Amino acid sequence: MQKTITVAVDAMGGDNAPSEIVKGAVLAVSEAKDLKIIITGDEVVIGKELNEYNYDKKRIDIVHAPEVITNCESPVLAIRRKKNSSIVMALNMVKNGEADAFVSAGSTGAVLAGGQLIVGRIEGVERPPLAPLLPTMKGVSLLVDCGANVDARPSHLVQFARMGSIYMENVIGIKNPRVAIVNIGAEEEKGNLLVKETFPLLKSCTDINFIGSIEAREIPYGGADVIVCEAFVGNVILKLYEGLGSALIGKIKTGLMSTTRSKIGALLCKPALKETLKDFDASQYGGAPLLGLKGLVVKTHGSSKSIEIKNSILQCVTFTRQQINDKIKINLSNNE
Image (cartoon, rainbow, N blue to C red; front, top):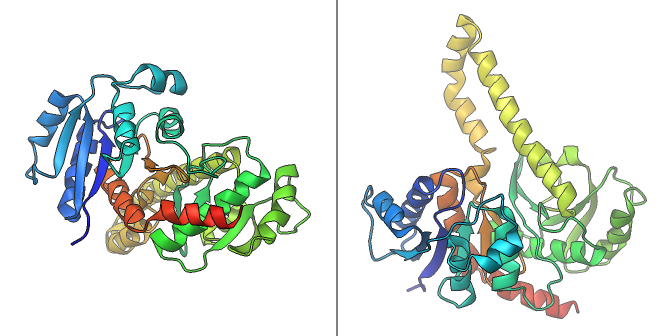
């Protein structure tokens, strides 16, 4: 019998808290029998939400957290001052071994700061990167980093590549994942100083499958499995990806409903179109793990609905089962 995985979930963070967060937690325990969830936040509010569902009450606990960290607060100051917030209390559970992982749709800055200040980095990890999965024509690609380190050094990017490769091989199941660095051209001599200094370091790594540079236009086509960059570039790629996808879907819907003929056509093609677009729905892939911490911390979109919360929680189960942190420790010690 497998060990039960415990995931702490911040119920008070995000645009749709706490209703969608609680619903996602209920959906997760209904799908994974070896899962327990601890929800942190306002006990009364969370209790009312849970009363709307039928679930195994032994597998969802509430820990009362009277304080909430908002997006407009200084992340580091909030983490230090609001010890009874839903984020800090959940992160302390991971630190103390009471939970295997933490999921939040709340303040990105607070989750990133708290992850490093409370949970702490694995020995040897210079900078933990935030790594979301991007849907592509060939499946998914991991973007490392998308928001944690805007001033990264070449050695940081090399670690991002190694940790990203471990994640893709063990969590997603892609053997010998292709690693590429974001660049403005395919030629090795192109790029800014950071890319030019990092390229030969990645090229010399024998433990990753480095395939060279990748231009942004190649990312949606699945040009690489692990896409390495510093957080400024990564965040621009991520936000453009999300915005363009939403705009295109909106434009398609407008076009399909513009005339009587197009409406008839829309009815005929709706099932096939819905199935096709499902592959590009980022919510089905869960949140972005902060790789390289002593415990698993996953940040989901602030606008996350219950499906993305559920998938983020289930993502934690896979991550923990595959002992990703242990594999990162071994990789770093072998490359010191």
